[in-house]
Length: 453
Image 1 (tube, rainbow, N blue to C red):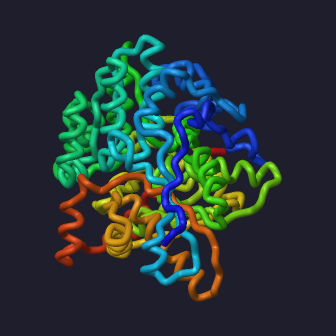
Image 2 (cartoon, rainbow, N blue to C red; image 1 turned 30 degrees about the vertical axis):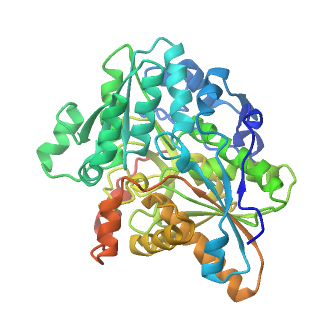
């Protein structure tokens, strides 16, 4: 065990730009469409939701977008984040594979989400915005935006999916400690929330519903804008700071990943780690395998249809071509609330369509087993979302063992699970069960996809 374990960059090596994969794609991503006209979206169509700088990033095809100094100053609270060699996990698996993970759980809110929350809050502040609305599943994004809003003097209202609001009270407490207002979604504060509750008073909620509520609340007030934690291009762009750091740290380690793994719900942490490596490949570098790990109970990449769909349940957001289970689909109440989204980021979906990435789906009991093994070996309790990446990494490491291949595997530990102890308690007591979706409901949701000529 005399090999190095931690690879930490000095602050001066903190990246100065975000990397935009759109610049290197062999084919452009299909355009988003206006929900009313079904014509390609224009910058003016997004103005009620986002400040000008964010709109520019969403539509940009420039390879590098400068990171503002004020944002880099906040990033220094936790960035560069460490890259760690998982020696003890390797030993436990008796694998010839070398396993590394990027630890994004060291951020103030405990996940990768502040990488986008901080710039989004700053750009809104620069544009004179006073308030932000958003949605959150497990609460990692809501907590991150609450933290960022407090830094820049913005009021933040978070619509948290009802099942996670009930399952994860401490994430709600964290949001409120940072100064945000947190509401269970569907709520009585929006017209759409009230319409859902009138039909189903005990609705579990979904990210699609919470997005509808947050957007409705944002457009109703002139000094308010909407912020989101995944799916759209500008969010994925901000997360690429993770992969850029990992590139330098793998060089420090004298190694180079053959397989790169991350969990996927909307696609932000997957894109953050993968896109800088994939960009090198698209510019003539070596080929690697990129594996997206998703929940079996909400399998947008492995079971979804690649088609135009709304990003929200009410059908008020732009249409995007993505792998989707249907915007009307309500996933079962699995503990990985951050992965309970009906669609996948258009950029990630496009890569899947081009055959540049792979996808695997896992049941939550297998994922919690992987997370417990990781905690016992490496000492870090992972978030339920990150457990999907760990389950996939273990699968790949055991494949290397069977095949006698000493491959290098890199995965993104997207957050810690310190606020998910009730789920671990249930798992340790053998009371956690695998969730399944209703095939009839899925078929109905897919049959209701919007018609786009």
